[in-house]
Amino acid sequence: MSRHESPRYLVRFHPKRLRHVFADVLILGSGIAGMRAALATPPDLRVLILAKELPETSNSAWAQGGLAGVLSPEDSLSNHVRDTLIAGDGLCNEKIATEVVRDAPGQIADLVNFGVNFDRIGNDLALTTEGGHSHARIVHALGDATGKEVMRGMIAKARSLSHIEIWDKCIVIDLLTYEGCCVGALVSSVHGERLMIWSKQTILASGGCGRIYRESTNSPIATGDGMAAAFRAGARLRDMEFMQFHPTVLYVAGSSRSLISEAVRGEGAFLRDKDGDRFMLAEDPRAERATRDIVARAIFRTMNRTQHPNVYLDLRHLNPDHVHMRFPGIARACHEFDLDIARDLIPVRPGAHYTIGGVAVDPNGRTSLAGLWAAGEVTSSGLHGANRLASNSLIEGLVYGTRCGVGASEEASRLPDTYHVPPISEKEVRDSGQNLDVEDILNSLRSLMGRSVGIERTGEELEKAKTMVDFWCGYVWRREFAGREGWELSNLLVMARLMIQGALTRTESRGTHFRRDHPLKDDIHWQRHVDCPIRLTGIQSLTPSDTGA
Image (cartoon, rainbow, N blue to C red; front, side, top):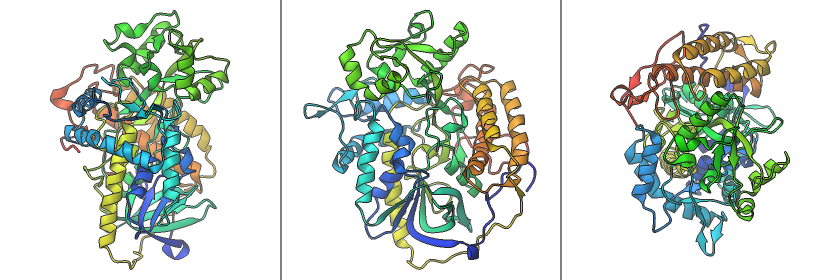
């Protein structure tokens, strides 16, 4: 392995020295996409779901806002598609957007059948509006804890089915491949035992890499493990330059950077600078209800202009009883710091929220690697383009989770029930990682990404970041780590390299990717995807690709 080459496998292993487990369908990830995939499988297959921690702690369970679907006679599918395309800034696949929007109401109905209790007004589902949406179409639960309730219902349903097993606290180290096909995964169990799980079909639903930034709304488990493993296995990734920053994250010293839902602005909250000026009025005709990329950049520039570390959300003009009823979770988080969301200005600033690029998939969720499917935030499906429309992500996870569950099950059912263990092993001896301060490198990486690969970028800053990340890769990748922290560092360095190179390659500004040295959108040259390289070795450039989902 050369100094700048990403290793094929993170650890050494040999099949004669490890325990083996067999499944028809292996699902890596226990969020909404993984659970929906499992619930779409027939009862005659053995389905195994691996959760990095507990299913209840996935990013999906943290979701506040809701799910977007056309459920009102005042709305239409064409409206939802149009809003999605506008937010995606020229990179959405219109056919994919139309299909996902078309399937959304049915998926919401399925959740109700699974036992999910959405908020209602009388017998009707309560609908609200969020940034970028032209109509009220967001269903929600528990006020502002939609993800928690959705995942509760789905997990309970999955656990009631005898053919589905859920393994908690199981770390995916790498995908296993043989003769150009994914045949399972190498994992570390809750007890630290390394296992080889062989599967007829594998579904990747492991989420994004939002924890590559210090300011992040993501669960600590969002370290790009599935994306990095897919990359090492040879699957195609694309558009890694697009990272969505949520405009409003609670910014109080000592807080855990709690998300302040998009729905707060949807319900009518204002954004003000430190002097009390409502700055969004001059930024976009939609003001606070503009898409996330526009609002996040406006906040970033306002912070720079005022030399103040945050801006403020103002709900004081809204009905206090409605505010507390609609946002009980946010009210509790703010109350810990003696802030009343109905009476006080709430300090907020942007934070990394959603990885828009990822593993490229076809309309059914197939990746470029045979035997491997993918759904949810780990993917680049063509739905989000260059910027995700609020509350489209959970719907995408449901639609593609279903498609992956059905497709992988059909493929697995066609294969014989006898399992062949191919001679896969990793024997390369590497240095020990014991003498590295992994936490220090992680902190440095996260700070660097925030400074140089954040809301606004320049070629000069990106080149410096690339040089620094290359330096870290040079001595991290030649070491073999024994546990989760080292593996996560290795994975995040893969993600950093891909994100930086993509941002350098795309010499325009579009959606969540803004280059101060190329501030205009260039549809002639860049209304296309950017494929990631096949391997990370040396200093190389990416080539724009016309191939889309």
